[in-house]
Length: 128
Image (tube, rainbow, N blue to C red; front, side):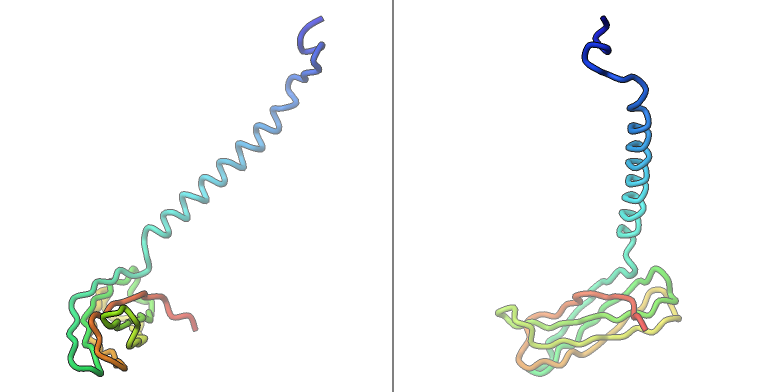
């Protein structure tokens, strides 16, 4: 009596399971690479150039947006924070589609108290 007969091992039946698992694994790996490449190239690259606290009621901010596609309209959220890092001002700046792929902007953020810093929190496509 062989060991296969003795312990009830079947040869050839597991091949279908192995092929199915391999196909699912390869499909998942291709999807994972595609998702990683999509997130490695953001829709816009934002660079803060400078900010200037003009008064207790406003901060001027200069920034640059490099869009992947110049046909994409964007909305950027700009905030001003005080010394305790509380948000004292926020504005949404819309950048229209068309024009150049690299856009420089200068915007004043109205504040309710004196700000210490200003920043761009995000830029995302406008969905209409």
